[in-house]
Amino acid sequence: MGTRRRGREILLQLLYQVDFAAVTPETALGIYESNFNKNRGSWDFASEMFKGILENLNEIDAVIGQHSEHWKLGRMAAIDRNILRLAVYELLYRDDIPSRATLNEAIELGKKFGSEESGAFINGILDKIYKTSDRQP
Image (cartoon, rainbow, N blue to C red; front, side, top):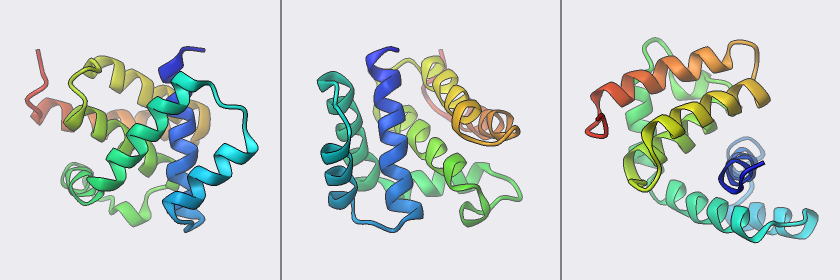
């Protein structure tokens, strides 16, 4: 598994803890650090993205809300919501990551960790966000 793919999985776990289990970001980082063997590259990628997402969470959630017709963030499955947050952060703030890679990775995370419908749900919302972004080729 690639460094960034593993980093996204770690990141999803961190975001889920903060969102669903209502732990502080510091606690989530500490739990992961003390319980799992960390690959330095994956961990660095995940922790950097985690901090960036939390710093920009209001804007990220607003973008998701604008493009998710008939779905409020609070009604979304926690896994789907946090995969969307991860992907929107990459689309808005990470020019070093190709948009298509972001979309593909988010869909794969949805298929792996979400429900049967997660991949299609995530794809639908991210496609709308991508089409209105300035990151298109």
